[in-house]
Image 1 (tube, rainbow, N blue to C red):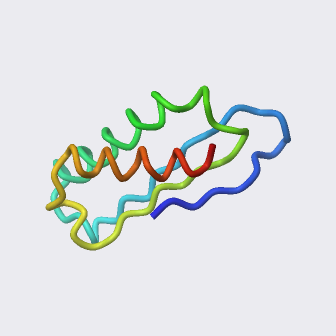
Image 2 (cartoon, rainbow, N blue to C red; image 1 turned 90 degrees about the horizontal axis):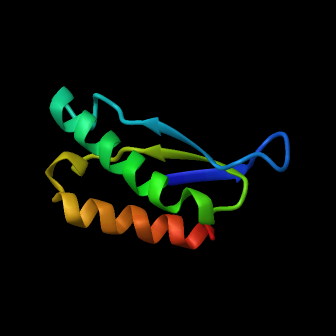
Image 3 (cartoon, helix red, strand yellow; image 1 turned 60 degrees about the vertical axis):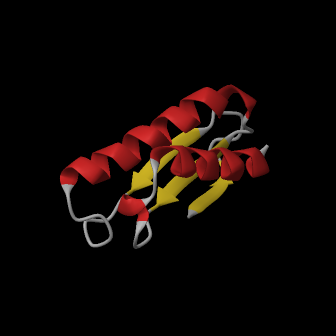
Length: 82
């Protein structure tokens, strides 16, 4: 899940926040993998995004999702923000 709002102060670059809960992703290896994938997806599309603050929230079962599928979903959500 991705939440967003206009950045304060207006005109600043897009920023990313991550909230990957231990409740949803038990192993630290898996939590770090999800965060790494989210950071990479954000880094690639950061220059195309408007000035927004984005928070990526984890949901149950995200640890079992394949890397490519997770990256595609994040790319799709970031594309909607453009």
